[in-house]
Length: 448
Length: 152
Image 1: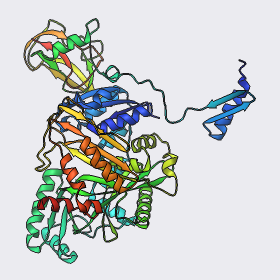
Image 2 (image 1 turned 120 degrees about the vertical axis):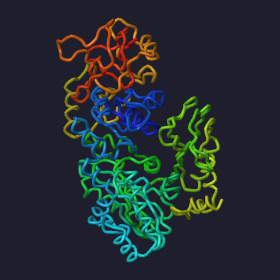
Image 3 (image 1 turned 180 degrees about the vertical axis):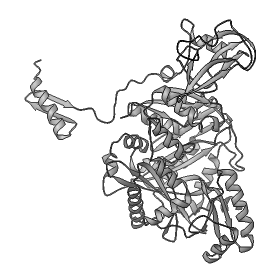
Image 4 (image 1 turned 135 degrees about the vertical axis):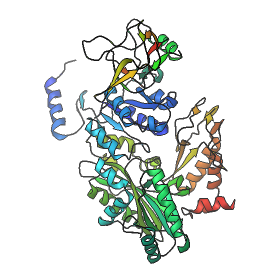
């Protein structure tokens, strides 16, 4: 087992990893920018190393800095968290070249799944159903238009090097195609440094259903059930729940086993998530995230498995724990997570600043994963998520009631948060009935 | 109490052979329990977070670390480290240090070398002046922003 793990991340996920390390008796060293010198993660880690100024590109994305820090600290392994360098194949490669263990899959697999075009082709050859679309990258506006006409509008153009919901364009009619094609190319280049784009059929009423998968070096490749992440705004998830209110046992078993099998055949190691669009009983592969996800606590609450701890165990060469390997796979109760952002709940304008007073909710089945504290200043340099409230109940109804109760108890004074928006969503009849798609929230907000 | 070391050795061997983590045997009012460390290590002492947190604070021997560091940080002539690495005060082991306390430096003079991943990075003075404080020692690790020296 590792003696010391370096955490190359910040905020709530850095804290999450520190917690797992501490429970396992592993020393934790966290890297941080100057802006995060007073963060909870820095205060609670066993050691910390300041690696750069506030700007991410000079700190959390600064590979040489992070590797130097790992050398100086004498770390055995590096956990990249989510975002930042977690899906950077070059980083994963360099971590290994410098003699550290990268807590995640191989650089080759990160690369393969990071390119959305290659990923789709790979999983398709392994038998996963995919969204119908261009067989690969779009060559020209004219050939793209022809493919779109053959598939039928509406279509969606996506950046091959995109992800996390960024770099997508919906085209509903032929007449707008060329213009949208050119815009997409330009934006892809500007945002991801790569103007490769591909096209998919645009599904009108899909749900986003993702499967948590795990593989170790002892031949185990499993799934830990699904999360329904259809409550989104501009392709960013706001609320995630598990199990999905719409899947049948049969569908769950089918897609779970397929995902587990795929991960095994890929030669994967560690935690991963396979994201699908689900419409009319059909699943369509969207992308695979080769890292731990923000919403991993939803799965932890309904399975009782500590996913970060499992990531560390598997990276150290141990098998997945027995509890997770138990068959048949069962989920217990229902869990919902809400992502709390420091934003105006109506305009979504970011609201960084000083949190004058903070009080976390409590009680049975209530979990608050956050790095904020009373007197903490939210830095303006990073994303606006300040915490996750995850609630578990014996069934979905109890879970929703408990979550509403917990939201009302939560105090974040001094900055605006999206807590009121979450409360509003939980009171919507469509949410209560489970009848929502990935377009639901935006449509509802537009009507408000 | 008489310790039956043969029994304990035998139980320990059984643990190894079978892969079990704990065995307890009892005979009348005497019992022996042998257990192997599991994967979860409980009982690591929880030091108070503030005390346990060690960031790399370079200090010259004999100087109170915290005091000099805090004062130096806000000094307008403070030269701070632009990177993470190991400080070397001289070009090669055995050669003279680049600067010493009291030395005069011009803009562009090398003050120290910071090594990271086997690459040597010379850190140069951005203005002229006199070195009034040196806060790092040869071979010490530095973080981004650590004060290396003060030039007035």
